Length: 183
Picture 1: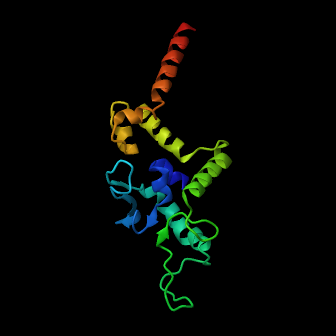
Picture 2: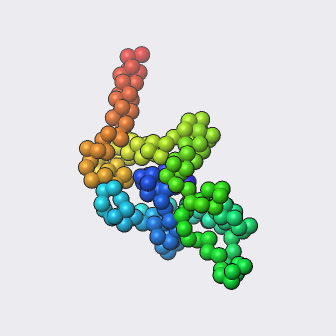
């Protein structure tokens, strides 16, 4: 969850609502996030590939963890259940909680914040991932002025500037250079 959000910093509403087979789907040899124009705040479709190096983590989640959360012992393809139909664990909400139900907006936010708190000692909100993406884009590819806006799916580049902390980093670096030159 954290790795996907870090690499695809979409809005929490869309992230929490990712659904297998529709907004989170397999196309060729990779996963894609596919949001229609009616699903995004900007009113424009947002389609982005998930890096292939996440395929193994996604496969482990979908075939081991998610079936257990859904109340199944394991991932099953083609076997019938008591009602005579084959269980399809590759449909429905992507993020599943312990009770077998799709996690909602607040539960996804809590899961991300708790995971980051336990992992790095600081709780990061899903919105922090968006802010960090804008800052990283500006800091690492400053000449590509529209990169952060495209990444965050902002229509207005001025909105993206509110997310950007790179200018503070640049100022700090310049100040450090001045101090170093004086020593």
